[in-house]
Image (cartoon, rainbow, N blue to C red; front, side, top):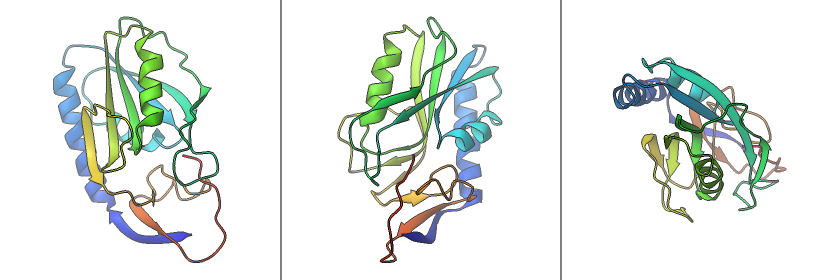
Length: 182
């Protein structure tokens, strides 16, 4: 696999995050908000999105895995790092890099809902359409894309390419496949 054409430019990402941040700021005006980034991919999205949110925010992170050694989710979810913050009675906004099958996020939402947050919503830079296996209510979306495998801006392939400032397609070059680590 190798990096192919740019799907979403750095400028387009910046504009989408500014728009999302403005809407989040409006929706949570006068309220405190806890942003929960889903590691590893969401760290870039969360950092840049937070710069566009004008209401006070706190940060926490979770790490979950459902990919294993494949380019598609296995459907088996493992929590690798849980929250350090209590969320009961708090407004929580989960920040995701990409939502594809919805299985991992559905599991995560159920596990957080039992902790009785005041509100629990989702913001995602990318939402893949046509491959949802469970319905997910995404409150803030940057871009809808197809089922193609993409890298950059926090998204990886075999641990690489997270540092690209844009979103690019991965294309088969006929070589060895490394395992992704979303």
